Amino acid sequence: MSILHILEKSEFTKSDIVQLLSLNDENVKILFKTAAKIKQDNIGNVVFLRGLIELSNICHKDCLYCGIRKSNALIHRYTLDESEVLSAIKFAYENKYGSVVIQSGEIANSGFISKIDRILKLAKEITNGEIGITLSCGEQSADTYQHWFESGAHRYLLRIESATEELYYKIHPHNQLHSWHERINALNNLKKIGYQVGTGVMVGLPFQNIEHLATDLLFMKEMNIDMCGMGPYIEHKDTPLYQYKNSILPLNERLFLSLKMIAILRIMMPEINIAATTALQAIDKIGREKAIQIGANILMPNITPGKYRNNYALYENKPCTDENAEDCKSCIDTRVHLIKHTIGYNAWGDSKHFLHKDKL
Ligand code: SAM
Ligand code: SF4
Image 1 (tube, rainbow, N blue to C red):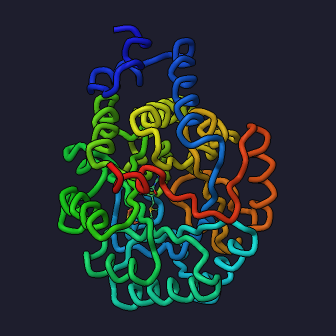
Image 2 (cartoon, helix red, strand yellow):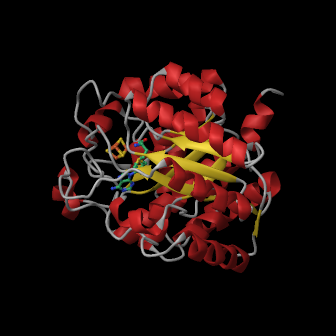
Image 3 (cartoon, rainbow, N blue to C red):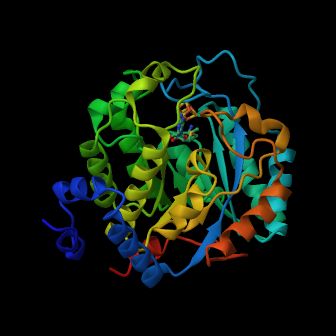
């Protein structure tokens, strides 16, 4: 089937998506142009910000791709104290970011759970209830999610990492702590509670093929997600998956494939929020801008205190680790304007898809 034929359809099949993901340099332009137009028609050219706070690199999990996995003894572990988190939130608020994302290694003890709870309440207090808060703190019990929701979090990011169970267990240990079914369960719990729910995958993993990626996009559609964060997998030398580094796609092809994933998802789900992730920028200095031009609408400038950033090393060459929040702010503004977009300051920038769900 021709690309134009596929792009006219209201629903894509798996084989349509595989065909779109296989497009080469020349004819991919039609895909990117279509996605850009759908974005413009549905959500316009506004980019919303979420100041990213990397709360802790302590994690009880051992995902085989991640540099801060429990078994990596070579990194220095840290946790921001409450006052450091609150001053980062204050920075975001005073600089009109509108929202923050609090991200962390997965910790499920009661101390961590109540620390997040206190931070949420204080964050609302010091910003007159105005700061929007997304959490990305891994799998927690339904009770914990409920608690955090009541304390002020209203969006949650939990990547499925792969919608194919078999592939999931090739990139995670296969045990109780790393359960594909539990991950899906957690996503369903978040939805039931009322969060705007985001998920996503890494692109270009060892053992991953284009069919897996097509399955991932169909999973997102079927889960009726509100937000997505996906980007290239980037190897880290102190992780088990590093041994496959010579069998995976080169970095530039992982970037290209990630951009195609974003464009196709924008066409499939015109009103969701899609993040232009940091990993895109790790491969190409203007990777995030490229993503915005073909479908993404969210940027997450890092506002973690500079001295901790080197330790939140999920993968190699993570950008902006030598900067502070103030540097990120001026840099982001210039970058967004250069691609003829504007920043939605002082706004939560909620997922339109979520806001329109009730009316369907
Ligand atoms: N611990 C929480 C979790 O896993 O949901 C949140 C923090 S975790 C560091 C956030 C995301 O980083 C993961 O969902 C994963 O997709 C991504 N990530 C980890 N290692 C990566 C790598 N080597 N390359 C690209 N992304 C990676
Ligand atoms: Fe922990 Fe998240 Fe990294 Fe997995 S991806 S090891 S849960 S921080």
